[in-house]
Length: 314
Image (cartoon, rainbow, N blue to C red; front, top):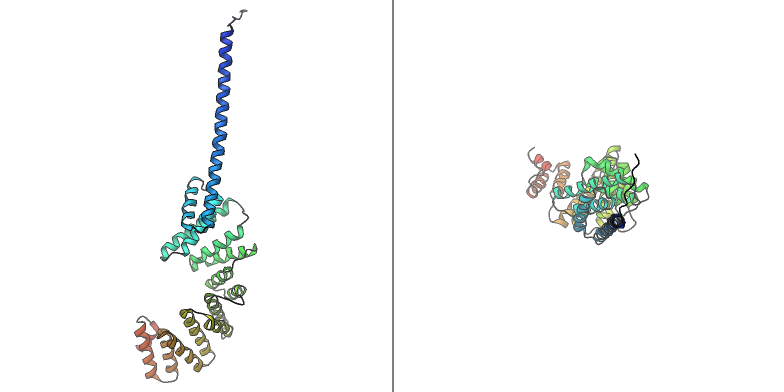
C-alpha cells in the first residue's frame, strides 16, 4: 500500500549533512595523520640509517655493531643493518685478545652477511664476499674451503683489496692446495713493502709443494732471504732463518745451515729449536757429546720440546 513520505523538515537535513561532513572530516584527519606518521617514520628511519653509516665510516665499530643490532631487532631483514652489523662484527672480532671472543664476533659476522646475501643482490657484493671469505678463514682450517670460495667470488667480481691475495693464499694452504696457494701469494706480492707474514707464507707453501712433489724447495729461498734482510721483527727473522737452514740441509749444505742456527742464537740469546737442530747436525757428524749438550740446552729453554727430550732419552 502506498505511504506518503513524511517531511522531516530542515532541522533533520542539517543534522544529516553535519553528520556526514563530520565523518568525512574524521576520515580525512585519520588519513592525514597516517600519512604524517609514515613520513615521520621514514624520516626517523632515514636518520637512523645515516647515523649507522656515520658510525661505521668513522671506525666506531662497537657503536655501529650495537646500533645495527638494535635496528635488526625491529627490521630483521634490513640489508644495510645486516651488512653494517656483519662488517663491524668482523672488525671487533679480529681486535679481540681472547680466541673465544674472536670466534663469537666472527660467527655473528658470518650470520649477518649470509643473511644479507639472501635478502637481495647488492652493488657491493664483491666487498661482502671478501669480508665473508676472511671471516671463514678466521673460523679455522675446517672452514678454509668456504674462505676460498667467497674470496674467489670476490675476485671474480673484480673486487680488490691489498690483503685479499694473502688471505686467499693462506686459505688454499689450509686445504693443502699449495700450487694455488703459491699462485695467490705471488699475485699479492708487491715489488716493495711485502709483509713478513706474506714472505713466510709464500716460502712455507713452496716448501710444502716441494715435499708433495719430492723435490727440494729451492723456490722458497729468495723469500726467506728477503724476509731476513728486510724484516724488523726478530720473531719473523728467526722463523725465516730456521726454514732457510732446513732447506740448506736438504741441499747438503750443512756448513751454511750451521751458520744460520748460530746467527739465530747470536740474535736471540737462545732458541730451543736452533739448539735442537744444532744437536742434530753434530749427531750426524758423530759428535754425540756435543749433540747431547745442544739438546740439553734446548730442553732447558723449552722443557716440552718433544724431539729434544726424545733424543736425550735414547
